[in-house]
Amino acid sequence: MAGMSAQESQAVTALLQRLKGQYTMLLIEHDMNAVFALADRISVLVYGRVLFTGTPEQVRELPEVKATYLGDESH
Picture (tube, rainbow, N blue to C red):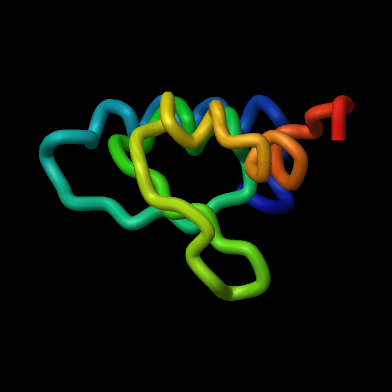
C-alpha cells in the first residue's frame, strides 16, 4: 500500500477483508495496521531472513518486532 493515502489504504484493506476466505492471499506489506487486520499468519523478515512466523497476536508481543516495526519506545 506504499504510496497510498490513508483513505486509499483503508479502502484496499476493506476490499481485501471482503475477499478473505474466498481467495488465497500473499500480502507483502509494511503497513502494519493492514497486516494485522488481514493476516491469519505473519512471517517477519529482517534483512531477508525470517525472524518469526506466527499469529498476529504472537507477532505483536515479540520485543524484536515491537522495536523494529511497531516503534516500541522502550528499545
